[in-house]
Image (cartoon, rainbow, N blue to C red):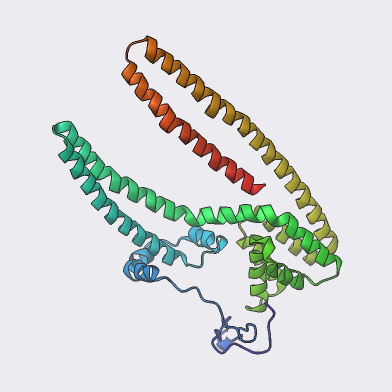
Length: 336
C-alpha cells in the first residue's frame, strides 16, 4: 500500500501520541492511506454488538486474556479478546436455551412413549445431558476457535513459504529494497497467507510509520508459522549485523524448497500406507466379519441377534470407517 502525501480526512490524527517528561510534549503523527481510499474498519455484527452490550461488565471483571489476544491476532480475527469472550458467552447462552428446550421436548416424548421407572430415568437423563453436554461442547469449541484458526494459518504459510521465498529471492537478485519486496509480496495473492503477513508488515511501515526492521520484528512475533518467524528473525539479524540480505534470501529459498519436497514425499508415503490400511481394515476385515456372522446365524442359534449385529456392521461401522478415512485422506491431499 504505497503512501501518498495526502492525508485521509477521516483517518485517525493521533496514530502515535506520547508524553515525554514533565513538559507534556506530545508527538502527533498523521496516518496516511492511498489517495481516494478510506481506512478499513472491522465493525461488529448486530449479534456481536448485543453480546458486547449484554456481557461487557462480566467479561471485564475477569483477568486479562493475553493468550486469547495473541491467538486472535495470529488468526487475523479482527476482534479484541474482551469482545470475543462476550460473543462466546452470548453464543453459549443462546445455545444453552435452545438445547434446554430441545432436551425437555425430547425427554417428554421419551417419557410418553413408554411406562415404568426406567423410561422416566432415561427421559430425565436425556433432558439433562443434552443441554449440559451441548452447552459445554459449544463453549469449548468457540474458545478454541482462535487457536485452531491460527494453527490453520500457520500450516498454510508453511505450505506456501517455499514459493514465496522464490519470489523474494528473485526480487532480491534484482537489488530491490527490502520494504519494496514485502510490498510486492503483499500484492501477490497467489501466496495466500504469506501475502497477508507481508501486507501487515507493509501496513506497519506505510500506514503506522514504523521502520522496516521494527515492522519485520513485530511480524515475526505475530505470525503463527514457526518457519516464517525464523525467516523474519533472520532478516532482522542479518540486516543489523551488517550482512548481505541477497545471499540470505537465496539460501532460505533453497532450504524451503528442499524442505517442501521432503514434506511432500513424507505425506505421499503416509497416503500410500493409509491406502493399504484402508483395503485391509475397511474392505477385507468387514467382508470377512460379515461372512463369519452370516454363517453363524445360519448354522447356530440366536440368529436374530446376529442379524442385528450384521446390519449394524453393514449400516454403521463400514460407512463410518469410510467417512473417517475419506476426511483424513482429504486433509493430507490438501497439504501436498
